[in-house]
Length: 156
Image (cartoon, rainbow, N blue to C red; front, side, top):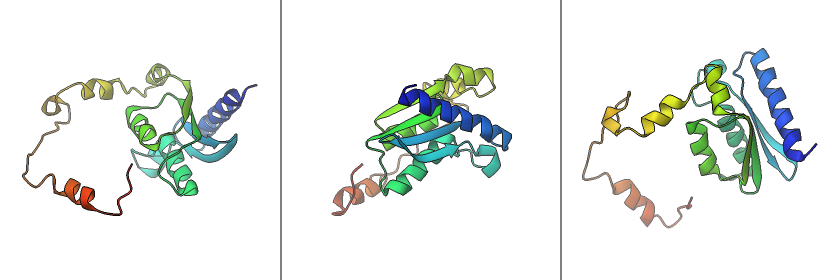
């Protein structure tokens, strides 16, 4: 069995175990140099936290362990194709690769349908189900200017 197959099997096993322990059917691993650096399971309902997806939990733990906000040189293994929120977090964390088992279409068949979010992103802000309304303000640029002027800022 290849390394990706081994870790995919492990992440599937952990996702199923998480359901038996009261969590959601998702798990993720951050792997570096063939070793598991961090494990995440879906904790949305157990923690009452809509952001506690397996990938987010694993990314947070891996970054804490690495002492850095990026996962350079790491791979992310996940039991299912990441949702839009997790996809954003993955791009911010910048792992080398992402491996996933089930597809978003498999998740939709089980009641986890992210199609609404993908459709909403294509809509103009005010026309979304939860309207996004731009409130222009002459001082809106100030935080960015403070950032640009800060001599010790850490670029990301």
